[in-house]
Image (cartoon, rainbow, N blue to C red; front, top):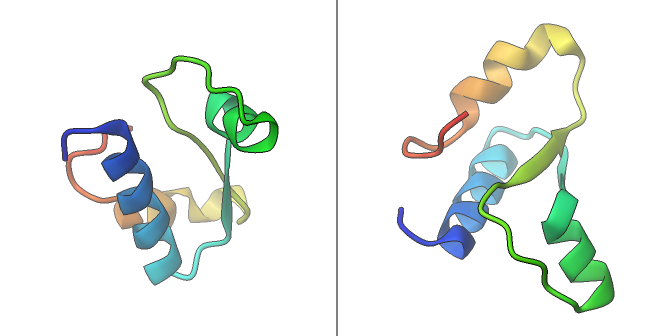
Length: 67
């Protein structure tokens, strides 16, 4: 994976495939809601599961995405 958009799509697809409810936040959410992009290189994602499932969430992320 090279581009930010490609990484966002990969993270979304991986979390969907694992049936993990999630939403993107930070500058990505701001750009989506306001239509005004702000430069960012990170992907803020909130996953709505109990903390005990953290290992499951991390293992669901695609390879090539730093965490």
